Image (cartoon, rainbow, N blue to C red; front, side):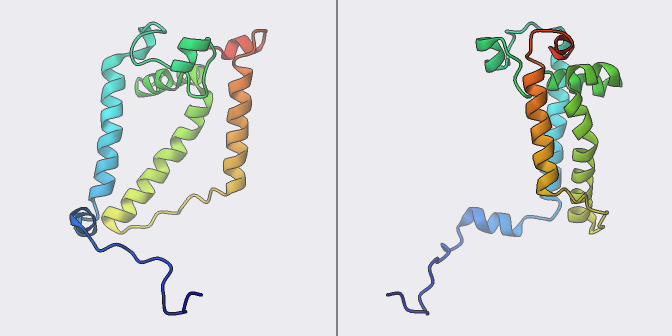
Length: 157
């Protein structure tokens, strides 16, 4: 029997990495995330995914091996069209990505503003039910875009 004084979990002593993370400035995480987003924008601007072939690197392994569109197929092309201001073409390639993009950007700005400047923007309250509905719609969209008859062929990218 375990005595009440014995803890079930004893955290390990801090090492170099945990001390570095604990002492890192508040702005480091938002800047690192912004750097990742900037590198994604740079890659998409340089690579121009709109005129590459289906087997050009990097490729979607599901599409390459089965011919089916995966849940994210068209997302990079949609992002490229968004960066060039062509929202109808972006929506044609991945409508759910275009729908989610403003929410994702707002959530990043709200998080980064609070971390860096201490300013709290109104938080988006996204319930688990809302996330479940969005994932369900995304699942149906993924199935529908692979159906081989009209009107679903319009969704095929």
